[in-house]
Image (cartoon, rainbow, N blue to C red; front, side):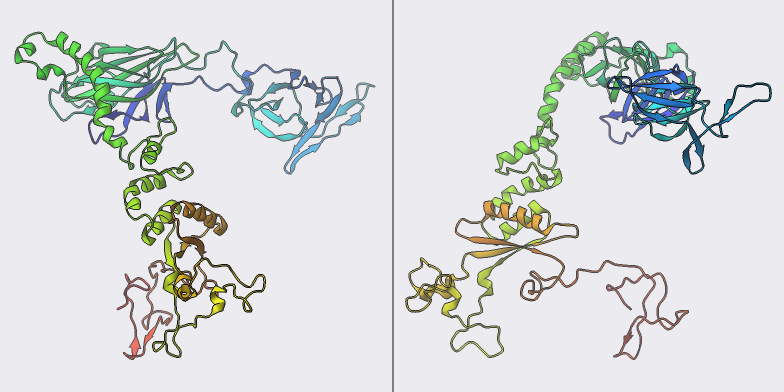
Length: 556
């Protein structure tokens, strides 16, 4: 037996077990799934060459050997294009033209082709639907329009498909795990569970070996067949998992050998294996007299009922995980995360990334407790957009001048009628210069003009579309803002614009925090080239920087 190592996943209910290396013969592992090895890929050399190759839409390719070209013929018999005759040069492919010469021993002229001109001998269909033109050990790839796409060694190019009755997989193969260490001398291994699919006509035979000695892979490979104990056969095409007791497996170390058997056209696919230990059945709940003597038959019977019971109790024992938004299943087949979101009123989350949905649902209770407050609105928008967010209430911007309190040079403003622009006869009565205000008394205008209004400041990141970011924030704000308030959204970009973004700390960003950087050379008076970083005028000498100092964080 030729043994070759490969990597495969072996899962168990014991912590610390990792990927297990297999001794494999006739099997392969792809995407974590164990299968029978496929039969070698068929190359174009295995395909019978044709002189006429049928194409799609009733078209065909006809080889004209004497003219060294391929004619592409339509269904009505018209030649649509020619491929060749070609001469492959260093710069690509060029049309080759033959010269007519009269041989010394004859009268009939013959054609003499330039050196390097292809000499096609047959046509083969390619796996991608193209046309392969055989030229010795080289295959020229030609498309349906007669264009040349390169020359490839024939042995490296997949060719025509296998016939329907040809075998695609080996009929059998084995895989053996490394030693599974229980850490318990004389351990009674309990059961093995296989997850995967076994098509009709295929099966998986499971054998086990257990000893207290840690054998090397080479020693396991040469063990006689009678040292392995048969566990069972997995051959039910309708089942997605299969389990059996490891009744004769006793020892600290355990090996499993899986023999995959197929019919040549299909293969079993084992996704993972679970190994349970030590032996734990309902026998431990019965009086000790039941465990005396020959109790193997009773244990096997109880193991059947334990498996059925565990299929229900496992879901109950792990049910709390599905009620935790950090661990709830978010797959399309069993989207419990969306169900949790509907319980707490978090709807419309389908378009958000899974991790952002989890954070929103986990924070639902706190968001409802702060609903309608500036902090609650800011946090809700921040969680939804995954951006830094602030809320500015407009009443904080009031700077009205108050009698006996305002000072020249202060940031105060005089409040006048033009700020509210009420409709007033013989005053502000021109169309477009006034607004109708339902509040009867103009004396409250200085207080009401900025009341119940706020702006959500969303700090954009590099690569964000400000218009899209603002549109998403406005849609959310229409749902979560208090009904009596008027909200607006402003996207903050790293800039400062007079009259638009001019409030430092709110909507104007001069520069962000610099990232720390390590100096590659020494700076100062002792530097080889005399470079100076900074001078401290108070101390009268150069400031020194240590080798491990970071710019902007620590200077000695």
